[in-house]
Image (cartoon, rainbow, N blue to C red; front, side, top):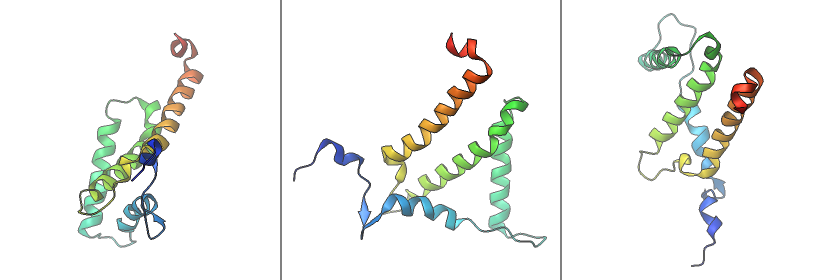
Length: 127
């Protein structure tokens, strides 16, 4: 079997469907939708508690200017935790093993950090 060096970057498919698309879409289908009732079920209560505690821990060392990143970082962490937990199931695909997903998440966040640093403190960013 002949493989090229770039075959490691190909996303695996099953019946013509890329598994990375399924693995990214599946966690959002697993989350329960909030209801308008006064009392929630245990899953919604646990999910809300976890997200609130994580956001508090994230914002603890940051000043007020850094709080605008809380929604982005919290949703990113919940997404990554869910995808990696799905990878623990037998015979499943973990999309974080693919370089395309990691670079697709890392490069825009890194570039945004560099651009905001250059805009807010150009002398410190260049020095």
